[in-house]
Length: 414
Image (tube, rainbow, N blue to C red; front, side):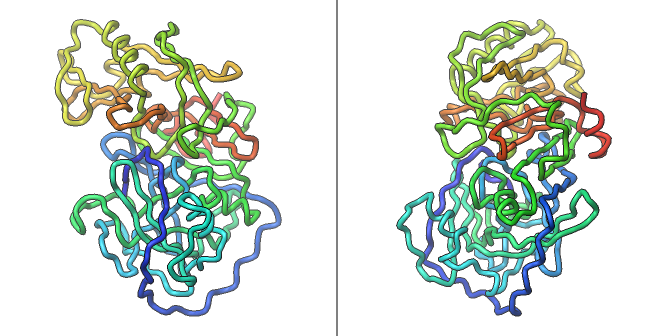
């Protein structure tokens, strides 16, 4: 399920005790690895028409596969689940069914962290469980209870490990009509900066360093990795990770926007990186400046046209089959951050070609979505390894193709 893909979440305690089925006594926690490890996962999905990238995670005992939307803009991982389900969408796999022994109690640190966003003195309705509600900016919600279960992870050293991790069992999702909407994923993989995020928990257990990276292919698919030894960090362009004024997002701070290497004359713009956002969002001033610069440079063969896919689109004399058909009519954008860290945004990182054969701008007006900051979404992060290094407090990127296998892709980066 893909709720508001750039949204921040807030967590609330709910007065509800779930009628969960009894289960067997919890198995002993698997032994920790002798040192931190890394893991690489294949991704599926695309920017258009799917609208998101997702990963398969094996959860439970025995382990069962679930498709999770990869979201570096939120912390809590959650699955639609049968607890029983009050409002769920049609998902690819059978709903996760928790047992009572999987409940995370109110006194657990994960629950305290989750509820701390609302009030440090908030108390649970009942001590045996930790209820939550995530609210997204588009009014979508996930309501449920916190559980802990095994995630089976295949490590790069050819071993595998079962890690008991806390996540949300969402039994009430207000997205689409109940039971009608067919969605591509079973839930969401929260990879944000908070201590309840999946990587923070793996770090706490000594399993992996708190470093996340992804490589999203323009042709669909790509890979996700956990750990700090997957790509050579010397190859990356790095920017210090700055605390965002708009929430607990990954941010390289404020950047100056250029079009075709010329300043657009807008004040430095606060930027966050969010794999949970399909498209890129600029606030009013940089958005209008970008649109004006793009339109001024277009050839007369391109005519603005209405397309249901996105707000601003153009048609050519012939239908477009890919962005490469029209790249020559558009110029690169650039964002310059602290320490001369520059991210180039070529046309393929801000344009899509729709099923109607039109080319559309994948940079959207954030003010229309009531955003007061700028979001670098999936479209702009394609064909780059994006690295969220929480160990060193930095964000990095390495441009290259993400089309091939994980190993060949990593070796192909300059």
